Length: 261
Image (tube, rainbow, N blue to C red; front, top):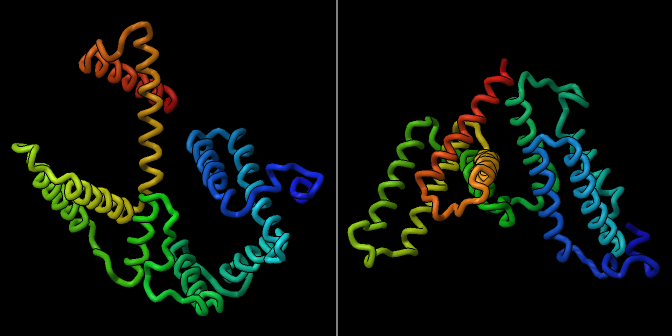
């Protein structure tokens, strides 16, 4: 990367800065996630290399302005891992993963750098650049850390039903002219936010769950397209397309049972 950024290197690489590279960091990270979701080990290896390239690229730009180098990046994370794992690198003990997480948060809150940049709100540490579902879940997690959370699952589910009722009220199905799209969007957002909270309460990651469902829909829809080859799907109508969808589902279920045997 140093060679690529040199006067004798690549014009495109020389033109980049931290801001211009940010979309590529997001893109490469998402491509690794896609490969991991598909359990494609070959592409996981390749995409991790692309992510690593972005790390090296950013570090090289920083080193040119004397801010930090790739060695500082590696040293910093190594020190952090040792510092936050006293049950591995020190004399402390941790009975289970919950104990590890509690100790991690305690150490994190006591670190000098964290104290110097202490947030005035629990929300200050939530990145605005996170995807919406991930950001919602992180906001809820941080609110829960200071006690703003239900300690039972039931009221979380009741909140979802409440938000659904409020959204249906805003829809005013009997009079579409009176619908307030902005208010409907707000209420629909409340439904999504409540669903994310429910996923957190039952120990699931909302973003991962949605990615899995989206991948499943894509996989099945592609198979429906194959079954409908040579036909005008729109002219076929929903009933026939739904029958193809059920056929695909049945095939997947049968394959799953065979693999379990």
